[in-house]
Amino acid sequence: MQLGKATREAYGEALAALGAEMPELVVLDADLSKSTMSKKFADKFPDRFFNMGIAEANMVGVAAGLAAGGKIPFASSFASFLICKGFDQLRMAVAYQGENAKFCGTHAGISIGEDGVSQQGIEDVALACTLNGFVVLVPADEHEMRAAVRAAAHHHGPVYLRAGRPKAPVVYPGGKDVFTIGKADTVRDGKDVTIIACGLMTGAALEAAEALAAQGISARVLNMASVKPLDDDAVRNAARQTGALVVAEEHIAHGGLGSLVAMTVAAAVPVPVEFVNMGNRYAESGTPEELLAKYGLTAADIAAAAKRAMARK
View (tube, rainbow, N blue to C red):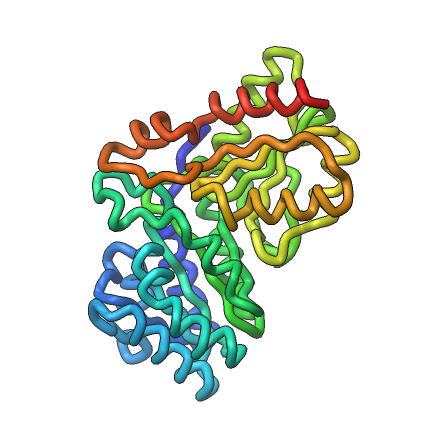
């Protein structure tokens, strides 16, 4: 598949574009704006940008205060720092209060590569999903990220956005103008098995579907960028119509997209489900390609999981 920009870069571009339209929008960063790409906003609107230093928990509290004062804050840092270090403030100052604050965790997953385990956010989606009232979005490519940032800005309530470091496969070559929170996109139709994916894994899911097609297997691919709220109808329909599911995510096994899909399936349409994720382990330092291959997060791994799910029908 064609590679586009990294979703973190699209995040920064979207903020800069929205800044001209929304004077109440402000941006905070934890001394990583060149990496999170929020610098694109800072360069255009320096009086509405706040570098909070290496202090994610304090940044979350300040964002909550700005939201309470009528601003629309977007605060960003690496996913592992933002969610893990700022969780108590996200819970008490934002979720409990229902503040209209937005947060972006960049460099998520193991595709950050050589930076190693301390900076690989692999539990952020699970933690964000436990925050009552939070919307959790994991866009698949640059086009979807821009649309998701706009949707987050116009949504009243807290939002967590997940962004990646590497260039992402283009899932929407024609662009994507509208992102609807709570809705999945069928990016490839199929009748034998459904692959549900988010983020970087959506591109891998499409590659897996192409490989399966060459073997006579028709795989549907759902891009579930809205992890919370989940599109339960799309999951139930896929279970009924294809009879087997695979859930692929660049995340630990528990608490993320796979757990949410499993709950929906178990409650309504029990079918075989296979899971492609990190399991219960941390990764190590290496190139993104090496790590994704070693920890079973490739198109080949998804295709193999699809065959296992189909065999259990």
